[in-house]
Image 1 (cartoon, helix red, strand yellow):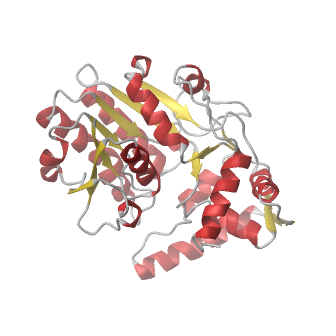
Image 2 (cartoon, one colour):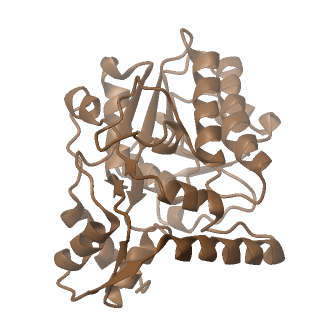
Length: 325
């Protein structure tokens, strides 16, 4: 099978590439000329230069492919416009290129985000058919990208949209901070309890594989994540327990997050590089219930999501072995 993977050099994309390359599939990685491809260096793959925000670069990339796995995304940006250029218009460009230059494409997999549907209004999983309520430009632009994809491909090319919850695992730089703090013996606890769902990164390629092989997944949206939820304090405790580390609880009021985001954004303006922690990310973090209904992924795709204890141990060991800790 010939697959084109966008975002292939990133955290999630590189795991998808690795999974399918090791199974012997012919994997093509869409990368920009300036992309850092260190995670692809030891894999038997083909790199194709292109950019989803520049439709004229996509013709040769999509031609002859059996499957497109669209994992490219703008996670953080200096301006609102940048989110939509990549997450909305980039998705539309890729879908239209597939229709125009490869109308016999067998399947289009779109890696979206739980941020597109928004948080649950209460302590229960949010259902896929409930109104979408994204709370950030990232989430709103990802939802817009989903709509572009459905509008372009429905009834023409089979597609599946996957919405991962908060993803952690080897190579991740965002949730890494919690592993780092636990390694220093610190367990953060927010004063107001907030519940989140986590997803081990290696479960995503398996979800892609199941969506490609099962007809039931055609033209559907699935949420991905462990079928349980935790507070950030419990996440830190799980990391420490799975790696036999002693920690001390540090209560953290909300104003600390707000102050950190202002400082990070000010620094971003000076450097011209987007802040990892900005005010919109804080808005997302302050939502009380990031919980989605993953039962269709379990019942229809047969997924068995990695539990946090096992995933945390694998991830912590990877950070250690690669000298991140």
